[in-house]
Image (cartoon, rainbow, N blue to C red; front, side, top):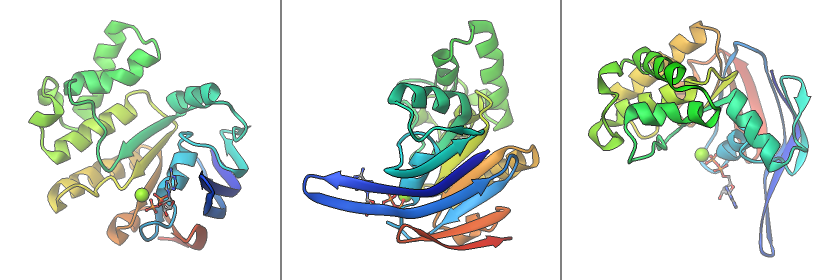
Length: 224
Ligand code: ADP
Ligand code: MG
């Protein structure tokens, strides 16, 4: 499903070059739950952005569902992203002026799904994260944990092949964090392919395989 080979990423800022990923290879099969752990600044988010087709590697190959996409242009990449990837971010990234329903509906509007089908899919997604009765609330009117659950519903509503989560519990208290993790565990039981990026060892250990990244290189792979 996901197969990256010797991926490197260099950021160029004027005269300064910063090589953040120094040759990373990862394979994730359908239905696997993989965590990527490592200290702050080790390149985790950079890797997630590449895996999620938000950014391209400077060097290396990326096969997603068998297609080599590291040479795609911005348009083609955006299409792949919309079709195949669901994202969850540390800061939720919900649109503040839209209510929960409208936030979850966005990816379906983007894909041209008709109103009636949108309504039933959004309601189902919100129901699956326990927020059916909060659909008319805006993010401000929800707790952090509830906002993250809306974000999960938004990530899932388009039935992506892969769910990518970058520090999904990073902004949450212990209780809301464990609710979010329970939802992720459930998704894994439903055979979703999941990649969680975290610096929290407890979160990482829930995954089937744990990959440690340090200073832009994979240091360790361990099956839990
Ligand atoms: P992590 O998520 O593990 O904390 P990041 O991938 O966010 O690490 O960052 C790794 C390194 O790359 C850091 O030194 C960071 O400052 C740098 N970096 C991240 N994004 C950019 C960017 N867009 N431009 C320049 N440097 C960046
Ligand atoms: Mg990060």
